Image (cartoon, rainbow, N blue to C red; front, side):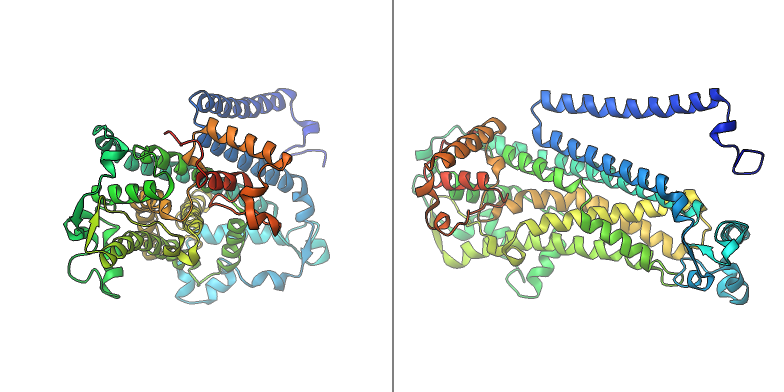
Amino acid sequence: MSGGGGEEGNTLEFTPTWVVALVCTVIVAISLAAERLLHFGGKYLKRTNQQPLFQALQKVKEELMLLGFISLLLTVFQNRIVKICVDEDLMRHLLPCALPSESASGGEEGSHASPETEAHHRRLLAEATGGGYCSARNKVPLLSLEATHHLHIFIFVLAIVHVTFSVLTVVIGGLKIRQWKHWEDSIAKDNYSAEQVFKPKITHVRQHDFIRNRFLGVGKRSVILGPLYSFLKQFYGSVTRSDYLALRHGFIMSHCRGNPKFNFHKYMIRALEDDFKKVVGISWYLWVFVVLFLLLNINGWHTYFWIAFFPFVLLLAVGTKLEHIISQLANEVAEKHVAVEGELVVKPSDDHFWFSRPRIVLFLIHFILFQNAFEIAFFFWIWVQYGFDSCIMGQVRYIVPRLIIGVFIQVLCSYSTLPLYAIVTQMGTHFKKSIFEEHVQVGLIGWAEKAKKKGGLKGAFGAGAAKGKTPSTTDGSSAHVQMGVLEHNEPPRPDV
């Protein structure tokens, strides 16, 4: 305890004070610099009135606080953890790498382990069975001190990579969505009135580009070829100008008919920023997934390889579904009408989405981004911590496909799936609270709360209030619902 040489070094009792002061200074300086960077970033976002991104930054701070708490727990209890002793036979099961003795007797299978890996295994075994607390009882630690330290680093790397990849996805996806702005501007330049826009004008349905591109053609109406077309469509021209104009007009006619010059693009960007603060966090079910993966990462199973296909398949399914929804909207119009009076109008509905819940798509994108970040974080952590030749890393034939799939998921999700999500999820039955500017949202919520206290909304809630229920929009809060109720009762027009 009192010091001396050895790999463990001296305790603070026998460490020079200048060393302690220097190390503390460096750690505190780095921490304060990171904190100030986040602080000034938050001030900039508030000053530029980017409230959704500011809330996303607050979410990042929460994740960092959680990481700090996890770090504190591991640090405080690491000495207690290494004193939890178990029988050595129990530690020979469900290993991510074969023990050196098993590798030596395993013939060709064991020959893949490098000398460095075997030396690392011998060192770990020596640590576990050496003259420590557990070895005195003829047992081994449940988790060695070094393994606890490595687990600590992995959790930190995972969270940082997830936040980084989420930001990267939204930034690239946002750039793609902003390319659609000239479509919105081209409509605004017409400077028409509501009477001109909705002036009766009979046109044949099949003359519209939206119907020609999404409804007409070989196999597009087929039960088998239709989904296949949607699957392929996500890889090229996922959203065209005719798609944007048709979905925009359908949204306006459903939710703000009195404002044909409604800035749908600006609303879409605000809605995406609102969703970003949910995507950037790590929810409890994602931590459950991490635990399950660590449990199933068993030698010979190649779990890290097979699990890479899970987000890959999910991403393709989500992209196909979103494209198919656009095709369904076109089919509904084309099958119900031969000619239309005025502009082509699609009808938004939750029925087009899985289980009639548009929010499921956001949940799946959140999971896909986290799973992909987990794969990349795990790869680099193993590479830096144990080396490229580590048995956990596996053979090159398993490593290369993982990396290719990870890059493909990141690119496709950023360039195609996220922009598709941003526009197609507006085709649900309800609009999102982002339809109102931030100051209007605050004003409406404040008014609703005051009116609720005075009982002034009793008639507006109708039968739902009589049953003790509050109707809800896709955002899920009572204040948002009141906005939805107000929309159908001639609210202040949302000017965006």
